[in-house]
Amino acid sequence: MSGQRVAIAREADIVAARQAGRQLAAQIGFSSTDQTLIATAISEVARNIVVYAQIGEIILSRTDDDGRVGIQVIAIDQGPGIDNKELAMRDGYSTKNSLGLGLPGARRLMDDFVLDSEVGRGTTVTMKKWKR
Ligand SMILES: Nc1ncnc2c1ncn2[C@@H]1O[C@H](COP(=O)(O)OP(=O)(O)OP(=O)(O)O)[C@@H](O)[C@H]1O
Ligand SMILES: [Mg+2]
Image (cartoon, rainbow, N blue to C red; front, side, top):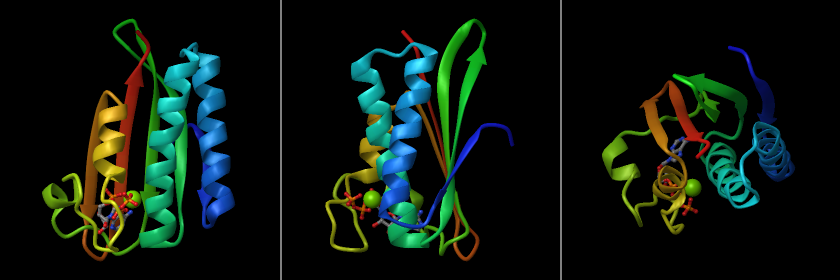
C-alpha cells in the first residue's frame, strides 16, 4: 500500500499522526478548518489503536477520483477486533466507559467511512475527505 505510514504505539504517535495528516491536508489544499477536522478524525482512530489494539499504523495518502481530490486515512491494527460493528458506530457506545464518540465522530467529520473488523484478526478503518 502506498502512502505515508505513521506507526502507532503510544500517545506521542497520535500527535505525530495528527500533525502528518494536517500537513498532507494542507499540501492537498484543504482549508485550515478542514485540516483541523481531518486531524481530529485521525486522532480518534489513532487513539482507538492505542487503547484497544496497543499497536498499529495510520497510512495517509492523497486520493484522486473522477477529477476530485481528497485525503485518504487508513487506520490498521491486528488487535482484538470489534464484535458488533453497528453498535460500535453508535454515539455513546463504549466498552471502556469512555464517551463512545470516537468512531461516529470521525464518520461525521469525514465524507467516506468504512469500518472493517473481525474478532481475533483486527480492525481497519478507511476514511476519505474530498476537497470542496
Ligand atoms: N481499533 C479497535 N479495536 C478494537 N475495538 C475497537 C477499536 N476501535 C473501537 N473499538 C470498539 O468500538 C467502541 C467504540 O469506539 P469509539 O472510538 O466510538 O468509542 P470509545 O473509544 O469507547 O470512546 P471515545 O473514543 O469517545 O473516547 C470501543 O469502545 C471499542 O469497544
Ligand atoms: Mg475511541
